[in-house]
Length: 277
Image 1 (tube, rainbow, N blue to C red):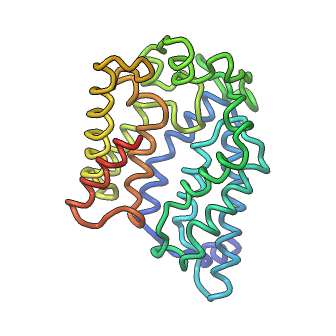
Image 2: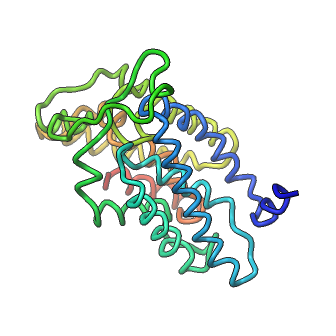
């Protein structure tokens, strides 16, 4: 009975459930690489994100959209594993409120609320989001046996892009594919993100044109800059596998609400995102 009453509060959205299913492997991998704190942080963020939308929708006698769960999960996955709970909570409240509800709720928002939340905490609290990261675990049972993995400072080249930027060294492509690198909670395993993208395309939930446009724009510009000798630009393949490009391309750029509706628009939109990235 209690469960039924809870479910009545939400607007059923099969598309959003498909996205959540695609994210399940990344949720488990985040626990494996960084410990249970990743999942706890995600749960806390989700509670406050849902509560924020509920407060607004209750006034209008509307149900909470299941899209808010996707927003909360995606936002959390862009955060470092060491992000303080209070910062993560402030971010999701801001993202849901000013990235979605002020426009009238689901389907009317101009921006992706997960990106609004991430941008807010990055600008407001840069130090906690850039200085300390968690060292990725490997072997069995990995992070499933710990709350959070060992912390490392960014000055020690904590992430693959920081390592390349500061010393020119590169992490092995196998580690990048598997996710055995430091980074944001859900952005490290390239192979799982790619598989999620294939699943979303198969289910016709995400636009392959937008994804392809992102790749064309990013790889095209990266190739030009890399081969004309710009030292701060890594090989295009390395760039694709690091820095959250894949995650942003597959989960953020393809947001069905804030992205273009025409095929031509999706190509142009994706290419612009790739170039800007």
